[in-house]
Amino acid sequence: MSDSEDLNVHDEPLTPCSLDPETGYERDGYCREVLADAGRHEICAVMTEEFLDYTAAQGNDLRSAQPALNFPGLDPGDRWCVCVPRWLEAEEADCAPPIVPEATAKAVLTHVSRDTIEAYAHEEG
Image (cartoon, rainbow, N blue to C red; front, side, top):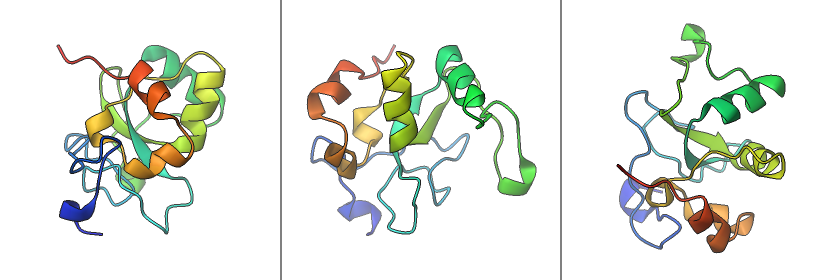
């Protein structure tokens, strides 16, 4: 799919999640559906202390840089494409990070309801 064909959860053109740090399975800034991506990095989330603590406790430390993987390490407030299953686990544990719907792939709707996405929608400002 090209950028112009990628849709977000509102059926509008997908917007970039983050270009600094550069996120997405393809490290192009987009949380798009990529068939080769078994982890489904399709939710654009705004990092929180609570979520970073949670995911580290699950064995995925997102705070620490990993230069070999082109990963800068994340801080609260950074936007990042997170895996659909990890976001759902975090929601179950009451520590899911806010979602940026405009930058979240439409494919997420197969696992996360539109109402849930809107309930977790990040408020700019």
